[in-house]
Length: 211
Image: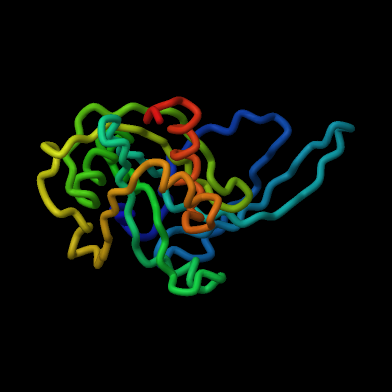
C-alpha cells in the first residue's frame, strides 16, 4: 500500500456531527509523526437520558481503496506480498503478508486512486474498475473507510513489472495465483489480511470466476 498522503495533520474530511446524543468537547493531537493520533473527549447520552463523559483515541490515516484483479478466462487473481511491520511484532514470523493491491486516497477520488495504485504495485493498467462496497476496517480505533473494487485484467494490460515506487521504499512482490489456490489460502492461514479475505469471499459468493 503506497503511503501517498502528506504526513501529519488530519486526513479525513471535516464534517458536521449529526448525532444529538454525542457532544464532542475537545480534540487533542497526541502524535502526528506519521499519521495523526487524536485524543477525543466527548459526552454521550444513554437511553435513559443520562450524560456521561468519555475519552477515546482515534488514529487518522485517511481513507483508502483496495482492489481484486481477476481473469475469468485463466481463473487467476493478482495479489501482492510485502513486509508489514505491525504484523511482524504481533506473531507473523517473517512479517511478510499476502494482500490485495491497496493505497491511500490522498487528493484522488477512490477510483482514480485504485487505478494508480494498481499500475504502481502490480504493473497492470486497468480502466474499468467496479466499486462493490465500502467498510470501516477497525472502527474501535481507526477512522479509515476502505473502498473495495474489483476489475478484470488481461495480459495485454501489463505495462510494467510493478513492485511499487522506489521513492516510497516499497518492495512489493507481485503474485499471480489460481483463484481456488488463493481462496484456500484463507483456510490454511497463508492469507490473513482482512481486506484480501473480504475480496476473495466476494469473488467466490458472486461467481466472478466460475469453477
